[in-house]
Length: 266
Image 1 (spheres, rainbow, N blue to C red):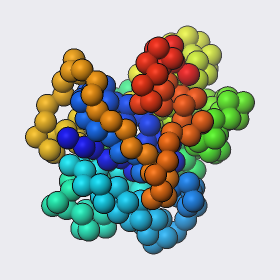
Image 2 (cartoon, rainbow, N blue to C red):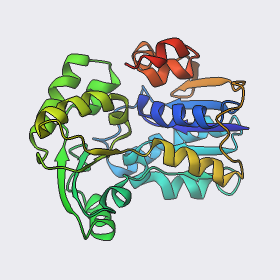
Image 3 (cartoon, rainbow, N blue to C red):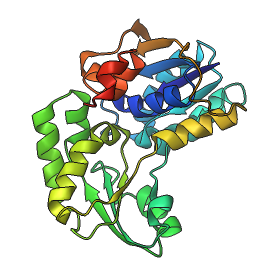
Image 4 (tube, rainbow, N blue to C red):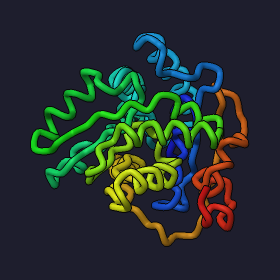
């Protein structure tokens, strides 16, 4: 069993680590695009072409499924990738977890990139799934880039700025960019200071897309299996290894097999 994941950069680590935990026997292939990143500022057509290149590089290894572990690429490129690769390779997109966050009708904050915040796509999800909740859209300029390059000081600054825009009575926080899941604990600490210690519920997409990928190929989660799955890394189609920045996160260390390091977090 082989599951591929794609993104512009290391935002795919969260979904890859979730997949590894659910199926330790799965071979994982990580296909990213350091030559073309960041994807966010690109036009939809340009972004889609970059995504096609990254997806084709992954598809050449004949995976059983491909996870598009990027919110922006899922918005603009998912239909194109499915038209090109399915039914041979099921393609699973990533959608912000607005629906489960809004289910209890609380005060929801959606942390997302500036390009996604206020976009017709996100506003459509809010209208469809969060009509009964109070929703605040929180732009997080610079946070994804800071995570990508492992710049801890920049991460702290960007998180602090976004926390200031988050209502102090927030009950649920949607992490609307896959990169943000890698610094969940930094965000948690900043919001604890903002809310006076009251801890909101966080809603990411990593485990949900991993479960969906397994479902699409007819495989059940079995986290207790021995870890026998391998890891292949592609950078803009070239065989590579996990970057130093990726190994700075617990998810990257888990994928690299450094489980003792991963157990202690970032």
